[in-house]
Image 1 (cartoon, helix red, strand yellow):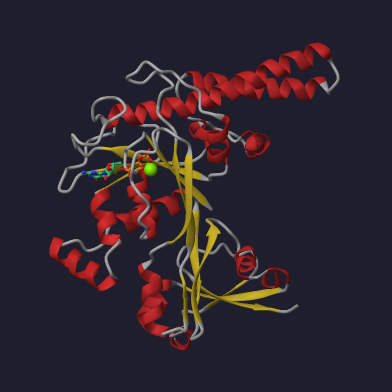
Image 2: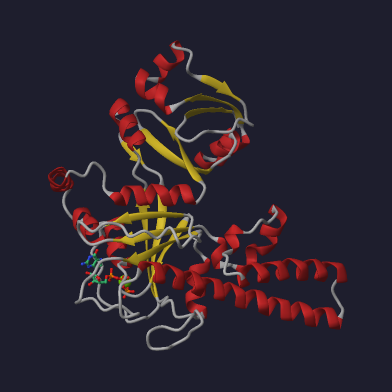
Length: 361
Ligand SMILES: Nc1nc2c(ncn2[C@@H]2O[C@H](COP(=O)(O)OP(=O)(O)OP(=O)(O)O)[C@@H](O)[C@H]2O)c(=O)[nH]1
Ligand SMILES: [Mg+2]
């Protein structure tokens, strides 16, 4: 699963990317150039920490998400402060199209020494501009498709009913986008969604707004701008500095500031949720492992993420909730207490459950 970090130039994308990766990429101006950096990031999970406490495994395997720092969008669909209007370049679209969701970093920090492309700091305006830019990009795709369908219909060739069905769908998309509403807010059937999957519509993907605050700054109210799914606020620069400290130093630092958990962790968890993902665990002295599955996955499908043999030869799974295992302290005790359930292949696995799969190939 891949999440794209987008935002206006100099909004703090690379700063937050560095915080995520404990990296130190230069946060210098990319000058509007398209530039992409990718990294695999562990999803922090206090439940996995607790399981590690119980098992002391040789190996710890957290869930992972890929983040990409994507520079190059400039929110200029409506014209920027220089009056420049622009379409998103093909190169940039290609990068954006490979993402499963977006984190929109919005500058809130005031800093005279960091130039703002719009000449002033205004989070509401920047959110709206980015939304519009993505929306217009989708609208262009829809309108081109409608033109082509019109021509196809005149020429004949393909099945007329199929063309009409597509025309009907794309006309609905056009109407929706024209009302400045992202496609993810549209009611689409699974078949329609599937037929759209080859078009890489940007506003179909989930969107998390990340308010990048200065140290001690209160988060502005952006509830009036409604087209994102979730919003988190964090102090980008501070989070980056914490991430670059050694773990012990970071702990001390957090205590000093009275922070129980860095907001960055929350941002990662929220983005994981936003992608419709959940974790289940396998435990043992060799490995405590968080596995990623889509919410609503069956036990058999989930077993397949561990290994395809487990899916093919699935017999049954022993399942215990995280809460029960955490309080009872071992699978054996959970079994004694009758908390270890035996579930079949169609069982819908819940977030945080610990699973032991029995299989035969
Ligand atoms: N004061 C302050 N400065 C910040 C903060 N976050 C980023 N900056 C500064 O803002 C500038 C831009 O930050 P970057 O992280 O490079 O921003 P970007 O979005 O990656 O910029 P481009 O790659 O050019 O689009 C740098 O000089 C950062 O040091 C913050 O939370 N507070
Ligand atoms: Mg950058």
